[in-house]
Image 1: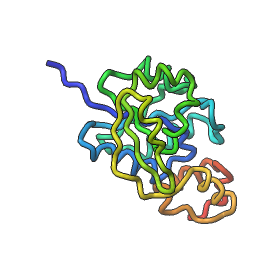
Image 2: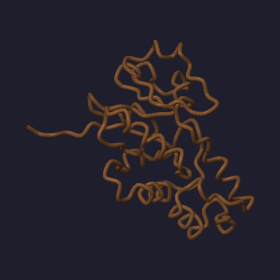
Image 3: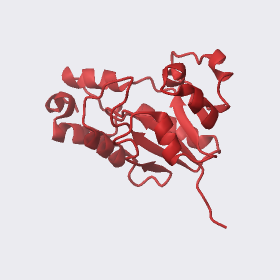
Length: 193
């Protein structure tokens, strides 16, 4: 008998990865429904633009998850734009698609959402200041809502802080601060450490 890990797939820009992303992954593990979280940095997302090239964002996730056996990073979306394509190519029947409540609230705008909601099991993480649209829960096939994420931080806020020369310590892992500084990402020469 072959053992297959139960997975939650966490897609995102990770531009940059921050402690909120890591908390979402930990909350997913705490459900007991999965064995690992697979981080999937997006290549060219249709809804939002990216600032750092894919290779840098992928590497930041790899650095932040290194040495944590329950976390894995893959490049499935290097040349893929849509969640439905990723799910059809890599998703398995018992996998979960992990996302924050804010992202879930936009599900009806996703490419081929009508097919996606039939195929995917959604693991939804409530986020601060965001109310999950309960009316949308009726359009998806299977879902679970985790404990809420208590960290209120966004990649946009972090990039703004970097441009302004403000500290980001505590908002992103220390290794990522060094990586941003070293590669001068987001105006990283101004990173307040």
